[in-house]
Structure formats: C-alpha cells, structure tokens
Amino acid sequence: MTTYEYHHNPPSLWGWFSGQGDPVLATSRLTVILSTIVIFSAGILGFTALRDLFISIGLFHPILGYLFPILFDAAEIAFAVSALNAQLQGEEDGFAWSMVVLFTLLGILANIAHAIFAGVSGHINSGQVVLAVIFTSLFPLSVALVTHNLKNSIKRQIKRNAAIKTLIHMMDDIRQAKSQLDILAAQQAQTEAERSALAEQKAQLEQEISALKKERRAAKRGTQGSGEANYTEPSPDSERQAYDILAEQVRQGKRNQEINGTQLGREIGTSASFGRRLKNRLLPQVRQDLDIPEPEPSSNGSKPTN
View (cartoon, one colour):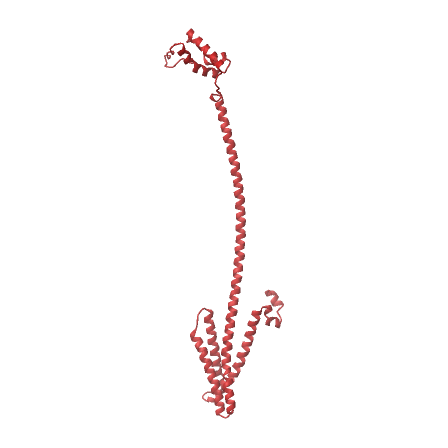
C-alpha cells in the first residue's frame, strides 16, 4: 500500500491488527498491545498496594503516597529500556540489568509487606494474608517479565526492519550495478563495432598497399624493359653476321670509318641498342682472332667511340 492509498484509504481495524497480511507485523503489534495491557493492569494493582503501604507508614503527607509506587515501576521500566538501548548499540549494560532485578525484588517485598501489615492491623485474616502475599507479589514480577518480553520483541522488530532496509539497499545496488553493466555492454558493443571498422580499413589499406607495390614492380620492370630487361641472347646467325661485318672492318683497317653499333644493328636487322651490345661484346674477340692490337686511346685519354 502506497502512502497516498494509506492516507486516503486507511486500513480497517482488523487490517491493522492483522498487519495487512504480514504475520510478523501482526504478532508484533499483538505483543505490544497485550504487554501494554498487562503492564497497565499490574501497575494499577501494584500502585494501589504500594500507596496504601506508604500511607500506613504515617511519616509523610498522604498526597505523597502517589509517588511511592511510581518510584518502583518507573525505575524498573527505565532500567529495562536502558538495557535495551545498550544491546541495540552492541553493548551489555550489566548495571541496568542488576537494577531491573533489584527493583523487581523490592516491589515484591513491598507488596508482601503490605499484605503482612494488613493482616497484623486486622484488616484481613490470616488466610487472606497468605493469599495476598502470594498474589500481590505477582504485580511487580508481571511488570518485569512482560517488560523483558516486550524488549525482546522490539529487538526482533528492529533487526527485521534493519534487514529489510539492508535488502532494499542491496536491491538498489543490484539495480545500479545492472544499469552500469548495461552501459558497459553498450560501450563494449560500440568498441567492437569500431574495431571491426578499423579491421576493414586495415584490410583495405593492405590491399591498396599490395596493389601499389605491384604497380611499382610493374613500373620498375617497364623502366628496365627499355634497357637490359628486354635484352635477349642473339641468335647464332645474327651473331655470326655481326662478327663477319666487324671482322671485315678490322681487316680493312678502317679505324676512323669503323661501323658503329647503330649501323651494325641496322645491318643485321635489329635495334640500335642491340647492335651496340653486339659490337662491344664481339669486337675484342674479332681483334684477338685477327691478331690486331687494340687501338690506342685518343689524345684526351678516351677510346674511340662506338
């Protein structure tokens, strides 16, 4: 039941006594009610007996007789509450407990004294004295025992309320932890998505790098293809034809009119670069075969050009 419903639709008397279906709350309320009735009844009965005893002493004004019974009952209850307070704080108050026992015994003695004095003074006979001694001593004893039982009931209720509060706090902590866990899960999912995107970007970059490397190698091969990369070994016929042309030139001793590599390539039907390579490779062999020395370097220290 919410606070609004409680104030605008208060429970019935039976609903209050039944604790709205909570047996622990119902029995706790019933214990408090019955304990109050017992303490109130025993207090009134003991109050009357002790007031009569105080007035019978005759030392004080009769109006002060109302204070004498309060001294016993109030002191007994006060020390019982003090002992409960100490226990709720995790301590033991031995003095308070001893005072509860002491004032209970004093209350019993006072009620016994009242019964004996009534018998001695002739207000009651001997049989009544025996009954009065037995049953009037129950007044302070009832207050002590019921107060102690009420104290235990209050302790249990306080512990139960504390356990409920602890459970509520734990449930709040669980809800907060679950909320934080959901947030972390969302962050993890976002991180995983970002990681997947980065992995895709990495794979794409690796592909682009691989393609660039292939293009670079192809470009490098293309650059070399214009020179040595496209070089192929000459056929025996082409090499023989070039050898004969160079040998003829060497025999005639036409050093100044010696065929160059471009012309040689044209003569055998190949490219100029191919002709130059053939000349550079075959000319020393031709001179060696014909036993013709290498030409002297020119005045600037360089050999004749090919």
